[in-house]
Image 1 (cartoon, rainbow, N blue to C red):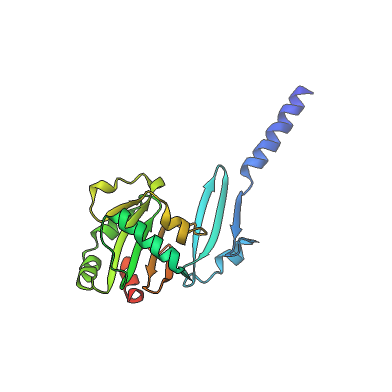
Image 2: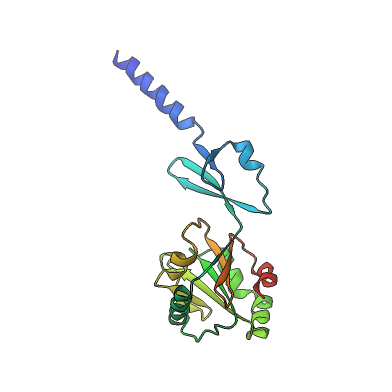
Length: 195
């Protein structure tokens, strides 16, 4: 009898272990089939994967979102941005924030992209650009003058409450309207949208 229970337990556990533990979510966080997930237009949406123990979660998100800061939010945001960057911010020009939740290879590419930073320098009256990392990222911002640490979590609280991506780029216009590019890794492609 004990031997029978042992084999039954072994059979059940091996079945549970080999079972496919992959789930798929659409943009509205509804469960979908793999075929529906694979059919998503990647020009509009991005796909991402998270792993939790033996569970694999695939989800879809929009590549872009828009919004607008109220006057009080805008004033507080610029005040905190000046504290984070230790620089005076020109509020009459567009502001780009490259936000990284963790130390990714894309961060190094952004820092070293000479073409991008030359363009920013040539257009500094029209645009401010900053690389900001979350405080949970454990990135040492003191090693590079272009990097800043968001000790107040202001960027995440204001702009990225519903974002699951590790890389986000936010373009803020002087009137407080903003556009967020989720998951975009090439900063050069943001230049057309920044003016």
